Length: 263
Image (cartoon, rainbow, N blue to C red):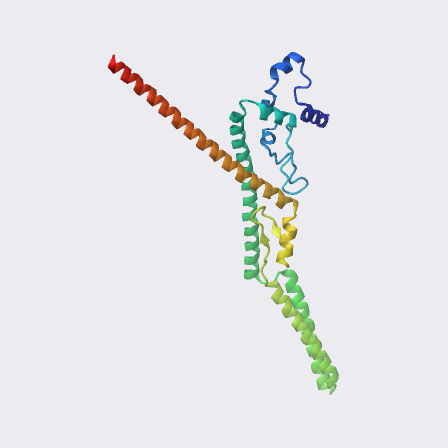
């Protein structure tokens, strides 16, 4: 029921159920209502676009109305700039919050990789690796003992065969030892904080950059750059206007003083 109401509101405007007199009074001002999504009016509501839906980064659903009719009403309003300045600043703050979350994810993943590598360096092979290495070395030692017995019995051919098998097992144990000391080389994405697959770096980066989470944060970061620029321009414009008002005020005060002195 709520979804149907939201759909009608987005298509027809939230004033569709008001009587004619009340609707006329509200005409041109409906976009200011609290239940209208102001991020959407500015142009970008990350929750409405469901950038991270069904992922571990899901940011939830926007419960407000996303209405093109309200966007048109906002664009046509004579005082839209006053509201646009306010809402652009709020959108900037929200996007900065989302980006901080991604940056924290980047830092956390890098700490996790560093911790894992430190454990490998300090602790050596893990339990699974140690068990496999011990098994291979034990099997190699047993085969060498058999090879020695065959040699003493004069069966040189069988002794050589057992010695070769023992050497192969010893080599496999050394490979396990070396692999267990290899540190993690996972690359962490600076944009979204996700780990990229190890192996083929170019292929891993290509797959990652096509992913839903990465594309979502690319859009958020691009919009944040744009919003920061607009907010900075708005603040500079406000500063210029404040300075102009101050100069006019001082000019009016000086003119009044000169008039009084002449009188």
